[in-house]
Image (tube, rainbow, N blue to C red; front, top):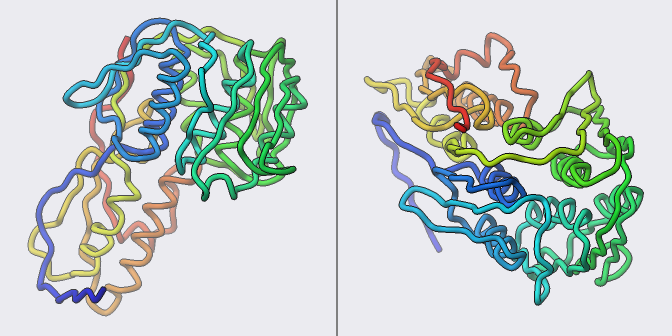
Length: 321
């Protein structure tokens, strides 16, 4: 296929991006093990997130579709044994995070996926979950899915991530909800903290001290959650706008956030860069926006990178009781 892109003099207007995938996954899972209905506005109806909903329904969770999201009817931490293997499709997030929840369930469940997912090693979640007391077997070989998880009585552990991974961290913290005693994850490289922030929003006792994140076994309470737009989807248009210094009006993106729903919302406006530096500034804009997404969310960048975008404060977007 041949695609031709013609140059334009300017980019202007306002756009809204779809809901954040990572937060959609987590909101649905936490809602499923909370007590009461959790309304999720802006849930991303993409293949990976729909795989999460399919697995949760197979575990006995009732989920309603609404015009702008879903309602997850949680009935507490205990789920129902599935009648067939749980299919995560192509979603590694679904498999890894759900494995943490299944590790604390009093039944055996199989987690599988498509050919691509079954080719991805899962030993980084198998090892810590086994240390906590779950029986996790890789049916595709020593490291590969399908996974057979025999949950049961778990014990809290202190686990140092050998490789930076928000998904492995999340799997261990979610299993920690079901453990006897506290569970601590040590990460020497900071990863996305969506799970920690959202666990706190759902009523979990969790704290971070330096590189240590500790979760205390907790019962979650339902919340109303608004999923922010995915800033990584917006980054390409904003970077393109930053490269077009002739723009009379700055294109802007609404609904995208640099933080999970527990943080402050910030719409992004692309600032035109000086013509001679437009390409370099566009690249910096894209890199900066991704650093907002995957970094520690402190928002501290070199002055040269700040020239690529301007952020404006807007009211906080928080779960409501």
